[in-house]
Length: 425
Image 1 (cartoon, rainbow, N blue to C red):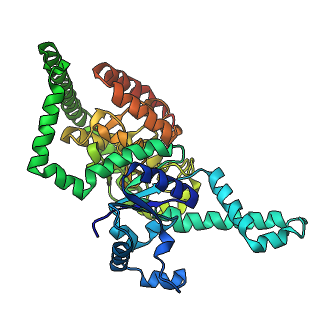
Image 2 (spheres, rainbow, N blue to C red):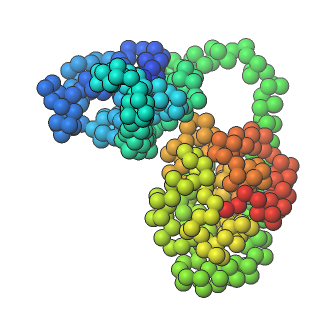
Image 3 (tube, one colour):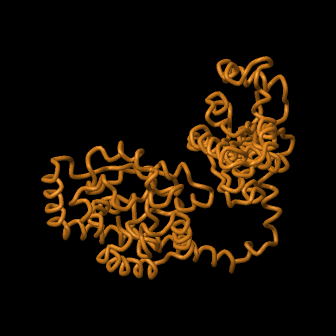
C-alpha cells in the first residue's frame, strides 16, 4: 500500500466529514472514506473489532483504492490501534458545545423510537424533554470516555474556533513535507538541479541581486546573532550570580521541606523547551510525595475546566511550606540552574509539560519557537489568573517583539509580581 493515509477524528462526525472533504479538495487524487466501510460484511461492530488488524486494513485499502491520498474519518477512530498504525498523519478536529448538542438532537430526531414517544406529548419530565436530556447526557459521556480520551494520539489538534479552510492550508504543506514520495523526489539529483535552475532564474534581476540589499541582509543577520549572544551572556552572568547569592535561602528552604515529611527536597519534571526539546525541570517540592497520582482525581475541580493547563486554588496536595514558597515563587528558584545550562533563559514563555504540548493547536505551538524563561509577559500580568488562550497570545506577542529593553522591563516587573503573590497558587 503506497497511499498516504490521513486519519480525521473528533467528537462530531459531520464536522470530521466536512473537514475531510475540504482537505480532499486541496489534495489532488484523494479519496474520503467513512471508517465504517471497512467493517467486514455480516459482522457487528463488536465482532468486526476482533477481526481488525493492520494487515487487514492494508489489504482492504490496496484492493479498493489506488489514490495517492486517503482520508479516513470517524469520531473514535483514533482509539483503534490498527488505524493509528497505518496512518501517516492523525488529526483531531474539536467542536464547540453548540455543534455537539445539534448532532445529538439530530440523532434524536432520526430515531423511530423517539418519534413514537414524541406523539404522546410532553408530560412532566417523563416525556420528550426527559428523553432529550437522557440522550444529551449519554452523548456527552460517550464523547468523554470513547472519543476525547484518544485525542492525545493526534499529531495535530484543530481547535473549535479554527476555520477549516485556513487550517487545511498549513496541513497540506505539512503533508507535502512528510509524504515519503515527495521526499524521494526532493532528494533525487535531477529534481534538485531543476529546482536550482528555476530559483536562479527567479532571482535574476531581483532586488536581492543588488549590493544594497545584500548589505542590509548581512547587517540584519549580524544584529540578530549579536542580540542572541548578548542575551545568552546576560543569562550566564545573572544565573551564576543568583545561584551564589541565594545559596543560604536554598539551604533554609531545603531544611524546611525535609523536616515537613522527610521526603525529597527537589522535584524534577520533564518540560518541553525550544523546538520541542525535552529537558529536566527542577523545583523545590511543594506538594506531598504522591501528588502526581492524586492529580487524575482532581481534574474536574480545576479552576478552568477544559483548559490545557491544570490550575487549582487550595490544592489539597500542597504542603504548608509549599503554600509559602509557591506564593512568592521560591519553589521556582532551582530553575536558575536550567538558565545556566542553556535549557532556559531569564525571560521567555514558561516551559510546558509534555501532556500540555500534546493538546496544543497549531497556533499554540508558536510558544516553542524560542527558549523558555523564568518569567515573561503573562507572569507579570496575573500569572495563574490568566487563561491558557490569553497566555498564548501574550507569549506570541513577546516572540514577535522581544528585545533587550523589553526583557529588562519584564525582569523589573517580576519583582512586585512575586512580592504581592498575585495569581500564585
